[in-house]
Amino acid sequence: MQNKPLAAEGRTGRSSQLFWPLVIFAILALVFALALKSGDPSKLPSALIGRPAPAIALPALEGLNEGGRPVGGFSNKDLATGEASVVNFWASWCAPCVQEHPLLVALKERTGVKLYGINYKDQAATARRFLGRYGNPFVAVGVDANGRAAIEWGVTGMPETFIINGKGEIVYKHIGPISAESLEAKIIPMVRAAAAR
Image (cartoon, rainbow, N blue to C red; front, top):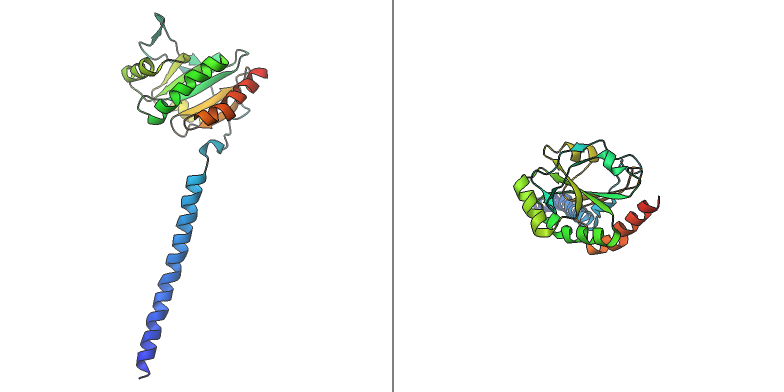
């Protein structure tokens, strides 16, 4: 008779040994899931803020024309002309880039800022179709065929947007697509602040 209670006690002990690790795992999984959902990737720090834009010399997007004239590529020297500018990394295969593109057009129309596009690892024909379909807000479009410029700029994914002051220094980095809210709350105020420097 004494064996039965001991056996039952042993089963209870083993059950509790399995129960608590599972509870702890479930709590940790919940904490990580909430952190991932509530995190704002645009708040990730960038080591480039306050520093000159990385040295680049990007070729033009082949066959891209605007008003019958070819649209050129650009270098970091084009970003240090005394005027604020915006650099946007994008690709035709990037769904968030499609969502954000009308807001880039609106940014140019509302602020008059020069937008420079960096087309990332894309086919020239599909990149041209993208701009033909959604509009071309860029004064120049450089091609980052091998992804080297994205590495130099610390880009983590498409799209990403950088605001540059007239000295060619990065003053703001926006990770992910620009939304209507971020356009009003962050991008336009930062462009105006960069223009005033």
